[in-house]
Length: 196
Image 1 (cartoon, rainbow, N blue to C red):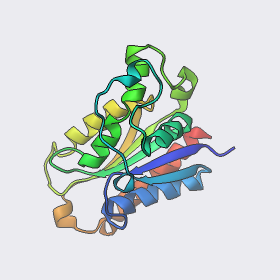
Image 2: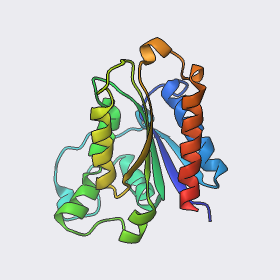
Image 3: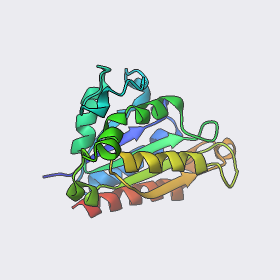
Image 4: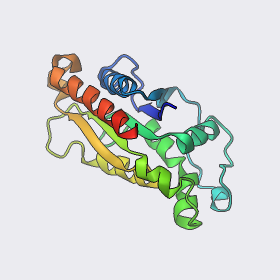
Protein backbone atom coordinates (compact mmCIF):
# COMPACT_ATOMS: atom_id res chain seq x y z
CA UNK A 1 0.00 0.00 0.00
CA UNK A 2 1.32 3.44 -0.94
CA UNK A 3 2.51 5.64 1.90
CA UNK A 4 0.49 8.82 2.38
CA UNK A 5 2.23 12.18 2.31
CA UNK A 6 0.52 15.51 2.85
CA UNK A 7 1.98 18.51 1.03
CA UNK A 8 1.02 21.86 2.54
CA UNK A 9 1.29 24.98 0.43
CA UNK A 10 1.59 28.00 2.71
CA UNK A 11 1.45 30.53 -0.12
CA UNK A 12 -1.85 31.67 -1.64
CA UNK A 13 -0.16 31.73 -5.07
CA UNK A 14 -0.80 28.32 -6.59
CA UNK A 15 1.42 29.10 -9.60
CA UNK A 16 4.12 30.99 -7.68
CA UNK A 17 7.69 30.13 -6.78
CA UNK A 18 6.80 28.33 -3.53
CA UNK A 19 4.21 26.21 -5.36
CA UNK A 20 6.72 25.31 -8.07
CA UNK A 21 9.21 24.15 -5.47
CA UNK A 22 6.52 22.12 -3.73
CA UNK A 23 5.42 20.53 -7.00
CA UNK A 24 8.96 19.25 -7.56
CA UNK A 25 9.07 17.68 -4.10
CA UNK A 26 5.65 16.12 -4.71
CA UNK A 27 6.85 14.72 -8.02
CA UNK A 28 9.84 13.20 -6.25
CA UNK A 29 7.69 11.60 -3.53
CA UNK A 30 5.23 10.25 -6.10
CA UNK A 31 8.08 8.82 -8.19
CA UNK A 32 9.20 7.01 -5.03
CA UNK A 33 5.75 5.39 -4.77
CA UNK A 34 3.96 7.70 -2.34
CA UNK A 35 0.40 8.95 -2.57
CA UNK A 36 0.55 12.72 -2.07
CA UNK A 37 -2.33 15.03 -1.19
CA UNK A 38 -1.67 18.71 -1.76
CA UNK A 39 -3.48 21.13 0.52
CA UNK A 40 -3.50 24.85 -0.27
CA UNK A 41 -3.88 26.30 3.21
CA UNK A 42 -5.01 29.73 1.95
CA UNK A 43 -8.02 28.08 0.26
CA UNK A 44 -9.26 26.36 3.41
CA UNK A 45 -12.18 27.81 5.36
CA UNK A 46 -11.36 27.71 9.05
CA UNK A 47 -11.33 29.96 12.09
CA UNK A 48 -8.22 30.67 14.15
CA UNK A 49 -7.77 28.83 17.44
CA UNK A 50 -9.95 30.48 20.08
CA UNK A 51 -8.14 28.76 22.97
CA UNK A 52 -11.45 27.44 24.25
CA UNK A 53 -9.53 24.51 25.78
CA UNK A 54 -12.40 22.12 25.04
CA UNK A 55 -9.64 19.91 23.62
CA UNK A 56 -8.10 19.59 27.11
CA UNK A 57 -10.47 16.69 27.77
CA UNK A 58 -11.43 15.69 24.21
CA UNK A 59 -9.75 14.63 20.99
CA UNK A 60 -11.88 17.01 18.96
CA UNK A 61 -12.09 20.76 18.52
CA UNK A 62 -15.20 22.68 19.47
CA UNK A 63 -14.85 24.82 16.35
CA UNK A 64 -16.62 22.84 13.64
CA UNK A 65 -15.04 23.73 10.31
CA UNK A 66 -12.74 22.21 7.67
CA UNK A 67 -10.05 21.48 10.23
CA UNK A 68 -12.01 18.53 11.64
CA UNK A 69 -11.36 16.55 8.44
CA UNK A 70 -7.74 17.76 8.37
CA UNK A 71 -7.06 16.31 11.83
CA UNK A 72 -7.95 12.83 10.59
CA UNK A 73 -5.65 13.21 7.59
CA UNK A 74 -2.78 14.27 9.84
CA UNK A 75 -3.32 11.29 12.10
CA UNK A 76 -3.21 8.91 9.13
CA UNK A 77 -0.36 10.45 7.10
CA UNK A 78 3.09 8.91 6.96
CA UNK A 79 4.99 12.17 6.36
CA UNK A 80 4.58 15.85 5.62
CA UNK A 81 6.02 18.39 3.20
CA UNK A 82 5.57 22.06 4.06
CA UNK A 83 6.32 24.76 1.49
CA UNK A 84 6.08 28.39 2.51
CA UNK A 85 7.45 31.80 1.72
CA UNK A 86 8.97 33.84 4.52
CA UNK A 87 6.84 36.82 5.45
CA UNK A 88 7.87 39.31 8.16
CA UNK A 89 10.71 36.92 9.10
CA UNK A 90 8.23 34.11 9.74
CA UNK A 91 5.50 32.16 8.02
CA UNK A 92 2.30 33.61 6.50
CA UNK A 93 -0.59 34.22 8.89
CA UNK A 94 -3.00 31.66 7.43
CA UNK A 95 -0.41 28.89 7.68
CA UNK A 96 0.39 29.93 11.27
CA UNK A 97 -3.33 29.89 12.14
CA UNK A 98 -3.56 26.43 10.57
CA UNK A 99 -0.71 25.20 12.77
CA UNK A 100 -2.23 26.84 15.86
CA UNK A 101 -5.42 24.84 15.35
CA UNK A 102 -3.45 21.68 16.16
CA UNK A 103 -4.00 22.51 19.84
CA UNK A 104 -5.96 19.23 19.74
CA UNK A 105 -2.69 17.33 19.17
CA UNK A 106 -0.81 19.51 21.67
CA UNK A 107 -3.26 18.87 24.51
CA UNK A 108 -3.35 15.13 23.83
CA UNK A 109 0.43 14.84 23.83
CA UNK A 110 1.57 17.30 26.47
CA UNK A 111 -1.45 17.77 28.75
CA UNK A 112 -3.17 14.36 28.80
CA UNK A 113 0.03 12.42 27.98
CA UNK A 114 -1.93 10.43 25.39
CA UNK A 115 -0.46 11.38 22.00
CA UNK A 116 -2.73 10.95 18.99
CA UNK A 117 0.25 9.45 17.12
CA UNK A 118 1.71 6.13 18.27
CA UNK A 119 5.46 5.77 18.92
CA UNK A 120 5.61 3.40 15.91
CA UNK A 121 4.03 6.02 13.64
CA UNK A 122 6.38 8.73 14.90
CA UNK A 123 9.44 6.61 14.07
CA UNK A 124 8.62 6.65 10.35
CA UNK A 125 7.10 10.13 10.04
CA UNK A 126 9.27 12.96 8.74
CA UNK A 127 8.84 16.58 7.72
CA UNK A 128 10.48 18.10 4.66
CA UNK A 129 10.54 21.90 4.85
CA UNK A 130 10.76 24.03 1.69
CA UNK A 131 10.98 27.79 1.88
CA UNK A 132 11.82 30.87 -0.14
CA UNK A 133 12.58 34.38 1.10
CA UNK A 134 12.85 37.68 -0.70
CA UNK A 135 15.69 39.06 1.36
CA UNK A 136 19.30 37.96 1.32
CA UNK A 137 19.90 37.81 5.07
CA UNK A 138 21.74 35.05 6.96
CA UNK A 139 18.91 34.72 9.51
CA UNK A 140 15.95 35.11 7.16
CA UNK A 141 14.73 31.51 7.62
CA UNK A 142 15.29 31.25 11.39
CA UNK A 143 11.75 32.18 12.50
CA UNK A 144 10.03 29.97 9.93
CA UNK A 145 12.24 27.00 10.78
CA UNK A 146 11.63 27.33 14.53
CA UNK A 147 7.87 27.37 13.91
CA UNK A 148 8.05 24.36 11.57
CA UNK A 149 10.13 22.40 14.08
CA UNK A 150 7.71 23.16 16.91
CA UNK A 151 4.75 22.15 14.74
CA UNK A 152 6.50 18.92 13.79
CA UNK A 153 6.99 18.00 17.44
CA UNK A 154 3.35 18.75 18.29
CA UNK A 155 2.05 16.50 15.50
CA UNK A 156 4.80 13.88 15.98
CA UNK A 157 6.27 14.42 12.53
CA UNK A 158 9.82 15.60 13.28
CA UNK A 159 11.68 18.08 11.07
CA UNK A 160 13.86 15.97 8.81
CA UNK A 161 15.37 18.08 6.04
CA UNK A 162 15.01 21.32 4.12
CA UNK A 163 15.45 23.11 0.81
CA UNK A 164 15.82 26.88 1.14
CA UNK A 165 16.30 29.72 -1.35
CA UNK A 166 16.80 33.29 -0.20
CA UNK A 167 17.31 36.49 -2.23
CA UNK A 168 14.18 35.86 -4.30
CA UNK A 169 13.75 39.63 -4.73
CA UNK A 170 16.78 39.34 -7.01
CA UNK A 171 16.22 35.81 -8.35
CA UNK A 172 12.51 36.46 -9.15
CA UNK A 173 11.82 33.07 -10.78
CA UNK A 174 12.78 29.86 -8.96
CA UNK A 175 13.03 28.08 -12.32
CA UNK A 176 16.23 30.03 -12.97
CA UNK A 177 17.75 28.04 -10.10
CA UNK A 178 17.57 24.49 -11.48
CA UNK A 179 19.81 23.21 -8.69
CA UNK A 180 17.18 24.28 -6.14
CA UNK A 181 14.36 22.69 -8.13
CA UNK A 182 16.42 19.51 -8.42
CA UNK A 183 17.12 19.55 -4.67
CA UNK A 184 13.37 19.74 -3.97
CA UNK A 185 12.73 16.76 -6.26
CA UNK A 186 15.62 14.79 -4.77
CA UNK A 187 14.54 15.43 -1.18
CA UNK A 188 10.92 14.52 -2.00
CA UNK A 189 12.13 11.31 -3.62
CA UNK A 190 14.39 10.50 -0.68
CA UNK A 191 11.52 11.10 1.73
CA UNK A 192 9.40 8.65 -0.24
CA UNK A 193 12.15 6.03 -0.32
CA UNK A 194 12.56 6.26 3.45
CA UNK A 195 8.87 5.46 3.84
CA UNK A 196 9.01 2.37 1.61
